[in-house]
Image 1 (spheres, rainbow, N blue to C red):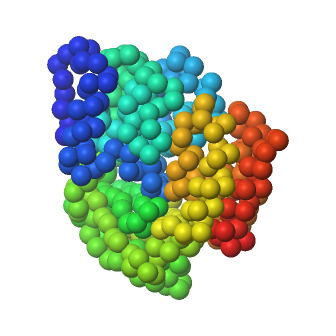
Image 2 (image 1 turned 30 degrees about the horizontal axis):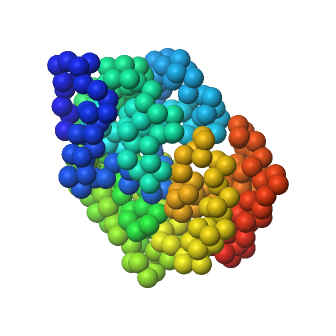
Image 3 (image 1 turned 135 degrees about the horizontal axis):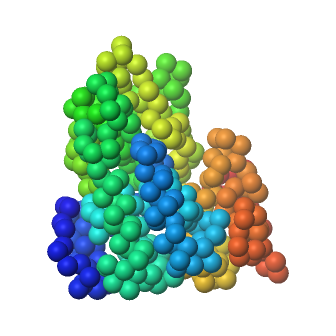
Length: 351
């Protein structure tokens, strides 16, 4: 999974990433499926923030990536460490991950190819070369007891969790960065905390194989579709169990985690027939990424209706109406886009 090539500069970005992407598909890990997930990545290794800021960011700035992505205009906060690392670590290798495929203009996902095209020219070009070196450093930090692990003789338990917006599948990882605990227990609760009204979904050890680091510390659970995959707002509480300290429950970073899984037929129809036709004006920066129901619904549900989200304070509406630092300005002038977004919100979420 971590193949090193002796002379990568001889390979074109397109040919190399084509083979990598096909390999991922054959192995059952579709390169773009993570875009359908509502993912929050744990900040397990803040030591690498400095490398990102001093090595990666300047390479992106040199390519003028901020012209489309400044302040997240194109849906990607390219100067935010946590956001970019989340893309970087979705993939099995330094030359096969979501971030590299995006920058190299060969991104297989529901939104199609990167509208900005290939920014590297060849696999050894920048910023691809620096992104691959960053992956190497992050992967080492995700190896229990490996390079970058904290110094000490006590467990350092970290984790992450995500929920697939289509199927409701819960996936994540939990591991001890010092390599002392070889199999970390986790517990999953729905709609409330442990001991506070939450429904226990699963108790398991985080020892499943994963396609990205950490490779052997995964966990997963498929909730009952009729109960939880119903296009309604839900809240997940995911805990690491610290056996060395009286089985203390430690919330995984990023939880409680608000999500919506499954599709509402009327909401999907409202989006496709009333909102999508008005999004063509956004294609120059965003491609067709906002035409995907599940991608756009994540923004519509941020903040979650469970946390005071409304038809006019959500991220999708905010961007379209020119707020939240949207470099494209107000896209509702002279059309019914904002009104249709509000109508879609009411159809999908009932308020």
